[in-house]
Image (cartoon, rainbow, N blue to C red):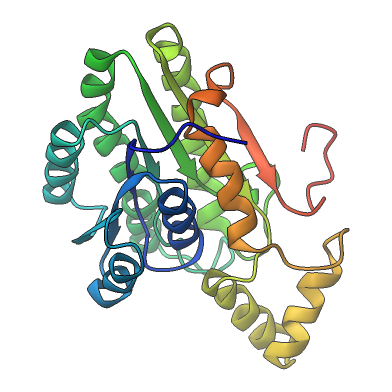
Length: 258
């Protein structure tokens, strides 16, 4: 299927690894131009070397206001069609383990910067009459994950904000959606493996096996698989899909609307 992404331009956060990297690769393979944003220049430099005609690098912290200005300028200059809000998650821990400073940090790292960046770029999309906003969150939006209280709390807040924003932009040619990945073979899962290993006195391999056992399809997801869904949501084909939280979890969510 031709997703009509050729010669379009996009911004992808957290591009150095995991879902962000996979989405950059998918978009570049489809012929799109991508600004890959990551704090690690070496990782996105490798992507630019792999796709020299399609990937540009911005080595910066996407959670900072100064980075938002750089992104907004690039989007205008390149007539960008969409953006992927993506960054690392908060630390693992239970409700009682997390002190108030960690809650404050999680507000900034999970919620605040997405609101601030969206406010900076939405006027551009409105003036263009077209745009795709895609937020990479977590299965914790749909059901809590043990020992991820900060993610459970703040990613739900992101979902509420995006649902509201989607309604406000629906008649302007702009969509806003969330992807809610479950357990995937990415570095982000390591913090859960480590936490379970410490709590239960088991090896990391045993912890990974225990998580995998929870997944009905019987295996961890792959980032490149979810990237194909992201590509479709960023494409013109997704015009009629907005304000949605779409799971990619191997059947992990047990609710009827999972």
